[in-house]
Amino acid sequence: MSEENKYDLVIIGSGPGGYVAAIRGAQLGLKTAIIEKEKHLGGTCLNVGCIPSKALLHSTEMYHFAGHGAKAHGIELSNLSISIEQLMAKKSKTVDQLRGGVQHLMKANKIKVFQGLGMLAGDGKVRIKEKNDERTLSAKHIIIATGSATIELPFLKFDGETVVSSDQAIAFEKVPAKLAVVGAGAIGLELGSVWARLGAQVDVIEFLPNIAPTFDKDVSKMAERLFKKQGMNFHLQTKVTGLKTAKGKTILTAEKDGQEIEFEADKILVAVGRKPYTERLGLETVGIETDEKGRIPVDKHFKTSAHGVYAIGDVIPGPMLAHKAEEEGVACVERIAGQAGHVNYEVIPNVIYTEPEIASVGLTEAAAKEAGIEFKSGKFNLAGNGRAIATDATDGFVKVTACAKTDRILGVQVIAKSASELIASAVTHMEYGGSAEDLGRTIHAHPTLSEALKEAGLAVGGNAIHST
Ligand code: NAI
Image 1: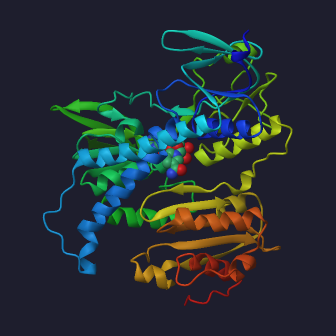
Image 2 (image 1 turned 60 degrees about the vertical axis):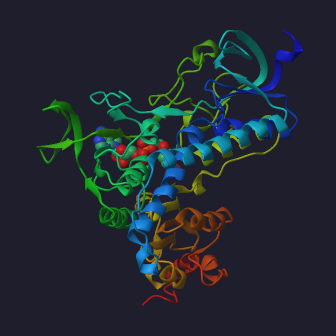
Image 3 (image 1 turned 90 degrees about the vertical axis):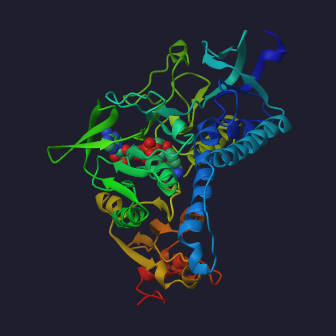
């Protein structure tokens, strides 16, 4: 094999896990290549996930404010309208800019980019099926970072037109009159919010008793109340059963307490989770077997059962989050380079970018209870925060849960405007093993929403200042 096709590190998949691992590899002096089957680098997150959805959320939030909040500030707007075409163009511009950024980072770090389908091809080999060509690379180390794909319900197959995944729901050409959303997790709530703000009737059908079910119950309950006020309808403990057509209309059928319910819908967004993506990856050529959920088993250094083959991100166990994949990519490459990279799985923040946003890190009260840990919690309502009052952001609260014996923070839950930013300081405190008192005694600028975090820390000891 020519020197040109020999690499220290070959990464399959260029999402946040893969491309970040590639950069770290190059920084550490490894001759690195990355393979991407799609036209653009960046994976689901950049192209059809986190980034475009955040652009749509931002634009529609401003539209919603213009129609519902501006007047209270003395801002008079008449003939308010929104162009979906322009909204989508703005979203695409954001995505394009970031695609260019990743491309630039590859070039700047001298990482070789191959566009084609990458497949394992036996010990230390990766085959790339390009458009009109095929080539084989040899690699001392191979990282699988192929991410995940949307889960399809057997009785609700995607047709890309009426029954859609988030891939299409970020790109509707017009506002659907009636949008049914199956699943009240991150995607269902974020994209449900986008289209509800644009005027769609949104019915969210969720199997479990709460929306955003992985968050603290108090958070879920408040979110449900606030999102209902924004016009979303929730149907909880409701099981979707099928699809039918009646009088030319599409009807989603569901069941609650033994009763059949019908939802007429122009579009049905199925957002019931994602599954690891390992199709046509050649795992069998190196003897890797996936587990019962289709994930690639790895040890704590991301090594698979095959020598020199590693896996990170959505294809391995753990939360399917871009920042988790990134950290794993960095830690995995550092291990390969003989350094001590590691990921602290106890402090991975989780965010839903609705309005208000929902963010958490660490254990919920329910999880602490289940683990048999004695805990105490402190809660602070945004209604008692000066900045929140001055900026119409009083909906929400911060809850800090700490070990009853040591006061060490176990988890933090936030439902508030900018919760995605607020959670960062909670993550930092936890990373350093901080206590609720540490957080409560840390000076936060006044007036900021972040003071609610400090107050919730103080509240754990019953010492919050601005609560009654
Ligand atoms: P999810 O796992 O967050 O939520 C799926 C929801 O669907 C759950 O509440 C579940 O109980 C419900 N469900 C499952 N089967 C159902 C059924 N048959 N009928 C009714 N409800 C049903 O999955 P989602 O929203 O599809 O997101 C996929 C992945 O992408 C997740 O891992 C998520 O964390 C990640 N993601 C993260 C985002 C963020 O960080 N803001 C944004 C979007 C996605």
